[in-house]
Image (cartoon, rainbow, N blue to C red; front, side, top):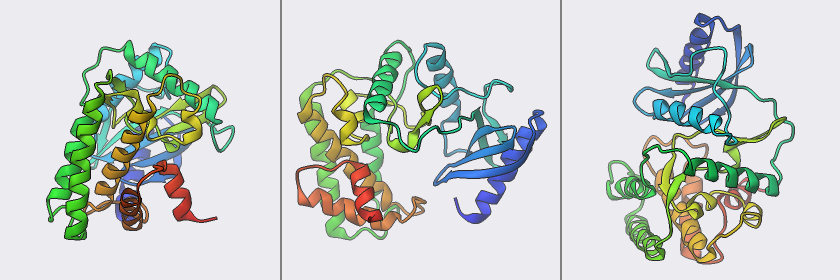
Length: 288
């Protein structure tokens, strides 16, 4: 979000929390992209704020509640208020339990164990969700429309469109079992808490093979996850790189330094294997 929207989003979250009897005199921005993550103080509530119409918060709240009740490693909704989506000044706000991080990063074995338990819990929850192919279709639509991706060169547009189609067909060729997935279980969506690793952000939840989720995590995490089809994982890593590349070229993308990231992801796709993980690409761009 830009500075004006951030100010309005914070005001909306603070106003909602205060109206619910939570002491919210201050807000610390934890993360800002298309959504805003806040720590409201002194009540210590984790608030997620998105522009209305650009979120699936109702689905996220419903699914998170069911997963927590099933014992899955999910961050719970704030227990002091009704578990629902609150709306104010054009923003959708959800309120969650705040956890003070106990370490900056989750150890790979703990990360893998938490993701395996989340997947197991998701298999017990009968909730319809979009398929991962729908997300490929969204990326293809961005690439196909010069109005939506005006800065993408025509040669890159043709290349990326072709790769997305090829990779869709390649994943289908494995005929792998599909289930409900987190959708983007990257390191930014797992909290290392006093209660162990907990996942956040189910807005990109979809159905697909578990390798699609694993394509978002560091390679060291995959080494601890049992039963992976390595060939399918390699294809899913390419697919994730291609989809993220498409979104980084979308007009209005608010990912920090997004165009530079989009250029690098196109380079990675053209360079060929071995296929890096997204965190490895980010580390290379951020430098030492």
